[in-house]
Length: 537
Image 1: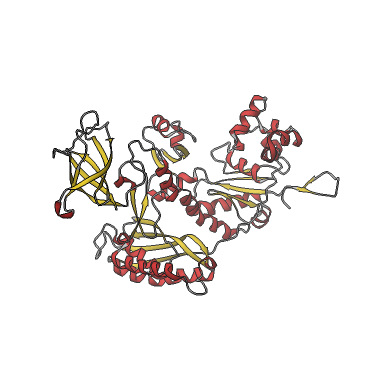
Image 2: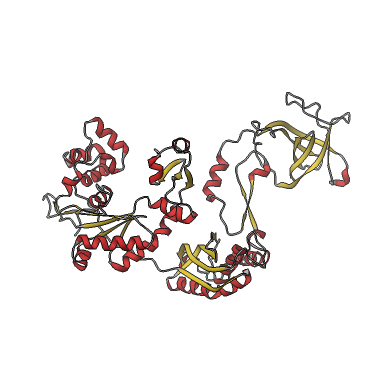
């Protein structure tokens, strides 16, 4: 039984259950190590991973230069001019740690994943099998190091929280394992600062009361803490006193949805690689069917004989079948290269499911799925013939000009950063953006137009952004035989300064016109001439 309480009966005070000895394996700077391996960077260099504009994690070399978690990017770069900045990828963090988890599960049962880079195990079983807690810790640390997580530290204590703090609180460089004697977890935690709880607001409030250590915090009664800080504060209070209520439970081992194909000798044609990978794609589909799952997002890693890895994540509006997988392999190989050849022969292809869903959510209806199914099938066939970028869907993005607000995404993909990032960009204030409603058709290429006043003189804009004459007639090149059409309504102009801080910046003026046929035109004055950007009929 794990640490917690046992109810004896109505009106009886809760009795603490005996704690369970826990072993925690912690790999320092795991997010940085995973990102460095994926990008081919040297993990010994100053590296910082950034999330939401702040430093999420950094390497030991960066910390030596004064870079700390929570700093802004500019301040971190000011402290370390050679800092390598990368975006933090949580999916990469989990994906890179999966082989380590499986290796430990092959040696001991009941692995509990606290977070990528940190594992918790009940120490009783490994200690009995390997002849003690210290030999078991060294053995498991060696397994973790052999599978890509060097420098792992191990802490053993009565609770998961105390064991993790023991792993992190190394006192000597040669010490890889720290064991807190049974029953001494509270004394071990007592001198540690409140910052280890990960709640800066709680540490600030307690600091004003003169409470700066876990031991001083633990001396408060449960009722005092619960009344002042609520359930979350009561939970942290129990952690500080060595009474961690969390259980060390084994995770549900996910099915193996990864397939590999090695080519010997390496293949130097994209069509050869795609054809050779068909059997692996069928195996991938069979594993998904056995697990009653479908893959909606996959990841393909292609490694050539030079050791260069080309990886990409592919999404699908429905789910991937073997033919879809083979198409993605071929498109990934042909991206930016000659379709008949590659920059280097391909030695290995790896496919794994990035996102899966229950197959019951994608079953066909009793009477078929109707037009949607036919549309998906038709688009998939066309995309297979013309390529990945040959079929696109339109999104409204953020920007000032109509062309900037139009975003084309290959069918089945998600926009860079996801739909949420596009929605956030669209909702930002864009000074100079035209008011709605937006026109129905944005022209691929702006068309030259002539706007004249009643006396036939061209309409221009003066230095104060005022029209030199009232628009009376309008003519678009190639439209209606080049004949002028009367202007029945107009609005504007609206000035727009593009990149005024650069030498190549421009000042534009936009206007809306309605011709005699009821068509609404959006025109822009650039380089001394009017151009049609969009039209709505």
